[in-house]
Length: 292
Image 1 (cartoon, rainbow, N blue to C red):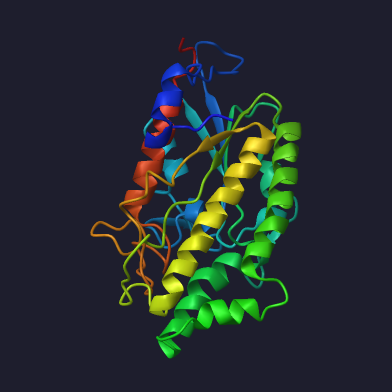
Image 2 (cartoon, helix red, strand yellow):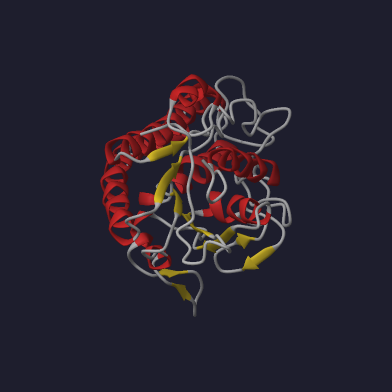
């Protein structure tokens, strides 16, 4: 596994094989990089302008679209969808009363050159409980540790759900390899949403004593995805250090607070600045077709 583009991996990247992806197009005069984006709402761009798939809360300014728009040699198939879990790699996802979207793996083919995959937070309702439920409990009970207490009372605590997710994500990556055998596969890690210290209850209304625990869960989510990428022998786009100064409480946050902002971001979801930063990191790692 190679960490792709993060400041923490700068030394490793300096000595690594250049991150070059040559076109597999049949016509060398018209090289095309076939890029498939798999992911959840942190990829789709929930409530980010402009929404091009209402059911999946998919924006034409999410990071896959920004990367494709910046290059004339990229052909994007964006299968990302809000609410997607690792199971939706292989099974259809209901996105409304009368709509389903195909399994995300169906977007892959033997001609696929590049795959980015960012999934896992929705498995076992992890993200729902970690952010939305914790915030709701914090509004009602600002003192104590209401979210930690509620989680400990659950049959399957959040940390244990990550173990199940890891197995499913590993299986999904194996299937990606099967369906797109020539593709370069990049797992996109999860960013820092909860601050390492301090609180901002106007944006993230968790109980103050739940903040450190929520931070541990944030780290556990990213660490789990990292370990799966390492075990699968695929590349990792490290967003942890990249987002360190842009958590939800930061002066320049990349993540929205508790209120939906249509056109900007859904509650607890990334703003455009996040997608721009991720697209820039991806661009650094993808050399043009035919590059040496």
